[in-house]
Image (cartoon, rainbow, N blue to C red; front, side, top):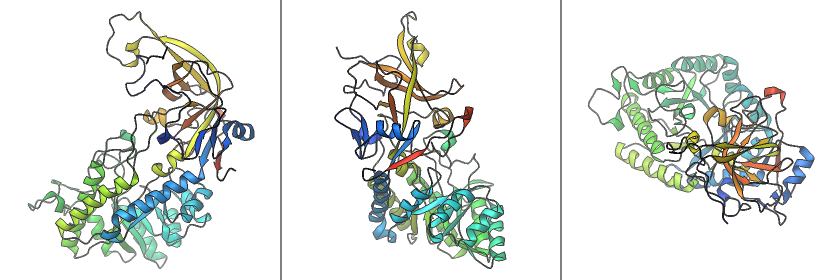
Length: 478
C-alpha cells in the first residue's frame, strides 16, 4: 500500500512515489544514480568519495559550474545585444570562492565581484585581471581600497558619502583615478528573508534616493524621472563627478537574494534609470553603466521553481529598453552579479548518518490548524549526521529549507517523514527540517543534501571544534 502524507509535513512536500528518483532541478547536470542505486557524479560513486575523503564532504561539479556561468553570460548577452552591445556578468565571489573557482570564472569570460581584501587577494592570486574585478563592502578599509586602486580594479562599488571622499583621496595620493560605481537603495522590499533583502531603506547598504521631503523631487515630475535633488544618492554623484580621483562609471543596486518574482528586478531597473535621467538633467552627463546586481533564486526543495536565465534576461531587457525610450536615455552598459544561481546547484553535501530516533508529535505542534483530538499523534524520524550547523548555517540563520536523499543504496522501505539534524550541542542544529526518507535509513548510510554550493562552505565554522569539511570538485570522471 502506498505511503500517505504525514499531517506534520508542509503542504508543498509530497510523499515520493519513487525514492530513487532525483528531482533534476535540485542537482548538478552530471549527478545521477548508478545501477546499484548509489549516487554518482560524472560516474564517480559517492561511496568512493566518502572512502577517500571522509564526510562531511562538499562535492562540486566543475562541468555544471561552467555550464551555468556560460548560460548566464550567453543569455544576457543575447537579450541585451541590440540595446547596449551585451552584458558584463560578474560572478559574486562571496557565494563561494577559491583559486580554482576563480580560474573557471576567468576562463568562462566572466568578471568577479569581491567583498573584502581577502577575497580580492584570492582573485588576484588566481590570475584574474584587475579590469574584470569589483570590490564591494559597506565599510572598506583604506588598505583594501588602496589594494584595489593599485590593481586598477574595473570597479569599486562605493557605499556611502564618506567613502566617495575616501576612495577619491586615496586615488589622488596614488596618482590614479579610481573606477567607481555608487550603490543605491531603490526602496524596494524583495520577497525574501529580511536578512538577505538589501534594497529597502532600513538597512546598512547603499545610498538612499529619498530626500528630506520624501521619495523623489518636489518639482512635479513623474516618479520615474525623480532622483531627489538633495538625496544622499544625488549628493554622492555630485561629489564623485567633482573629485579628480574618481572616474564615475555609473550606479549599482542589489535588491536581495533568493528571489523568484521578476517584479522587484524590473522596478529597480526603472527607478535607477529614472535616477540616471535626473543626473543627466542636473549635470549634463549620461553615466555609461548600470549594475542591476544579482539575487536570482535556485531550487532547494521541490516547491522552488527558479526562472531560467534566458527568461530573466528577456524580462529585464524589455523593461530597460522601454524605460530608456520613455526617458530619451541612451541604454547604459548593463552588468549583473549572479553568485548563488551559478554555484548553488553545482554542489551537494555528503554526510554519514549516525543515531536515529522516532518521536510522536501531534499535528498542531507543526503549526497546523488546531486538531480536535490531540491524542492522535504521528511519527517523525530524527536522523543525525556527522556535520550540521558548522557546515551549513543557513537553516539556523534564515530558516532555509533543504532536501536530502539516501545516497549509498536503494531501499524498498516505506518513506517516513524525517528531520535531518547535526551533531552540535544546539536544538536548532537542523540540516533539513522536513524530508521523506526510507524508514530503514540508519547508521552508516550516506545522505546527500543538494544545493549547498552557495553560502555553506563560506559560512562554515569550527563550532564545537568540528573541522570544516573539504571541497572536492569532480570533472571528466576524476
